[in-house]
View 1: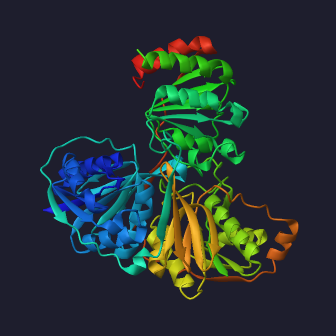
View 2: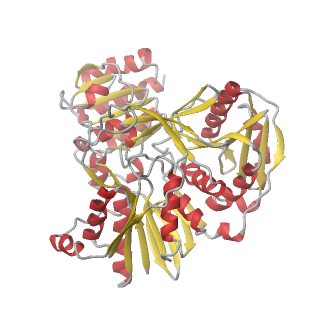
View 3: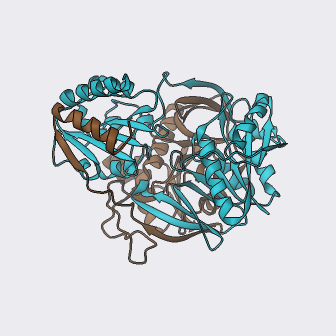
Length: 328
Length: 249
């Protein structure tokens, strides 16, 4: 029976939720092609206990490389370990999360194995026994459908796109050899600084509140922050390119081309006119709300719900309405 | 210090793209082509390193069709010292392109290789770490800030909700994201000087492209939305719709 591998990700001793999405996608494809679902997990010595969590989402076998040297992420050391595991294992496909870790890791594994890689897939399909991958190009202005001409298909999957579903399996746990050499540890993480507490990354947040040039200046961002706080821990702030280029907000928050392409459940576009490159970056969101003074702003063409009005008027009202709701 | 910067000719981010009649390519009519925005950040970062060191050479290199000469010239006009065009058609298989770059860079012995995190056409975000792996050198991706000192590169790598501080010995590759590297505009003097700078052309030794494109499609149309109302008065109805119709709050 063929096998599909889902590469899981942990940080700080917890499985990141994108791992569940990747496992679920792997299981869906595995059902179509008649394959077993395996998972791989790399991290410090204590991670062995996390393997059961991967079984909860359908991994029949979990390969664990637990080593003190894997306490922090190392692109080459993780890649060496995974590549050696994959090399002769006969996997039909290997799925990575297209997270910060997966985007860094998957190309290194691909180059070591001399295998092509399709990144940031938004849909997977099996047609005539072949894996068909859909992925955005030109920052979402078009989508490409493609297949990979290789015995092991390497694909990374966009976070927040494949819905995680539990499917309990009694995972058997196997040890994966840590094969990193000293050359694989030339790049070293000396420190990790976290963004301010509660600042969920815009690429992973289920709710995004983005501000545009119409906010008039960074001093007005408290209006957006208040709405974010009212919506709770699931919400993150985003920004248009104009706002980032003006230096009002950091690039990490930018949505659109040269920023992040996002697909949250709920997207608020506040004082954003809707340049094409911005629309391309957020149009796959579940529900889009636009708030803009200009009734002819292009953003209203993609928004499900729009309010025409001034942010100083609309945002405080919206924040207090949502606070009142969340508190009841 | 010798720095090689990889850059790519891509459609401008504001261009409206039309899928060509073959259903598999972008119609080039009406599209303005530019240096990939992230590649431009990488070149800016390279030029600043050279300026800070007070010596060195910045080489711009591209895999692309003949028209990519235009983007390499733009790199020379910004301040790069020489250009290498590896002629060929880069497809979606980044490993095939990384092999062509590796074939050229293996003997160049650059101290630092810099790329943008991704080319904004195929958006694969893979060539930097693939190239470093093929060359057997360390690499740091999604770099928002960096410095080079004592034979080492120290960089800030952006991750979800934080920053990794990473260092690696030279030679190394860094893949640059947008942040502190707002690219300079080429001066008239720079544009004139670019015409006299060394420009080498050769055939790209592309690897086999093993990604088979079936076709391109536009993103799905969103259903027509509606204006709920004007000003703060419309807020209660919006909240009701988000709660009862869209069920997202």
